[in-house]
Amino acid sequence: SLRLNGAVLTDAADADAGQVVRGTDGVDRVRVTLGDLLPGANATVVVKAVVAADASGSLRNVGTLTYTLDGGTPVEVASPAVGTVVAMPAVTLAKELIDGDSVRLGEQVRFRITFGNASSTLPVRDAVLVDTLPAGLGFVSADLQPQAEGQVVTWRLGTLAPGQTGALVLTARAVVHDGEAPLVNRATLRGANTEPVQASARALQLLGFLGE
Image 1 (spheres, rainbow, N blue to C red):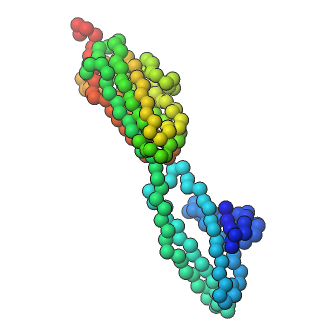
Image 2: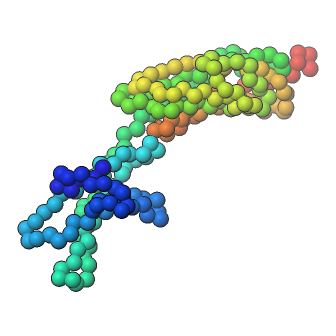
């Protein structure tokens, strides 16, 4: 919203003195036409903006005033930059192999995944947990009713309140014995307003059928 000396300005392109113009660079610029300023006159423009959900780090804002004196060449002066630090919650994620370090074809193996919001003040919005099973393991079941498509298992956790934690168990089955390299199972937790984090369980050795 825009205000000039306390009076509300609209942001419609064809309206009054206040306009919001989006440049080719995708940045919104607020333009207010002040008209003639008499000697000793002053004006205050108040701009309220909403920080984007994917904003991070520090936001920098600068105001610019353009004017002419007696019809001369336009003069431009800029204000000192104002910085705003965007506070973000931090998510935590851990994954562990519940059973032994090896599994035979046809047997099941379980993983425990724990997650949380480490912030004491900010919620995590639209939290999504994704576990991508390595080739050789097939999904069997999991807590919290995930969506499983092939090797990708997804939990849409919604909002994680400040300090909220959770845990679940994922069960997979050894379905393919392809080579001697151990399997590493990784998970990723992300939110609309936080950086994603990854976690992996210790390596799992996939063995053939007993007697092979």
